Image 1: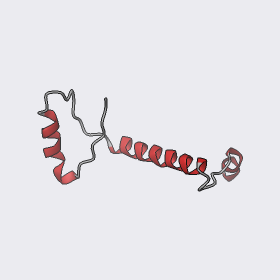
Image 2: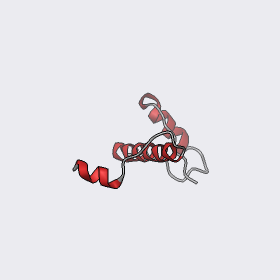
Image 3: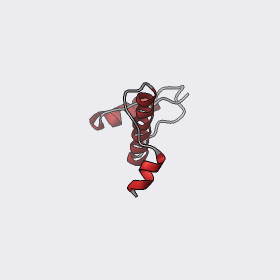
Length: 69
């Protein structure tokens, strides 16, 4: 299982040290800013799809997106 933990920058060193000292943790490495950005974009997209399925928002069609180009 993988778990994403958000730690404030001011506590990052301490948080990584704690994780590294837990016997059952295989590896504790920070995630790059690029990967964090991608993850946040995917979360936002998934939330928009959920809201669309619930009828709370209307998403653009593929044709509408292509017309913008």
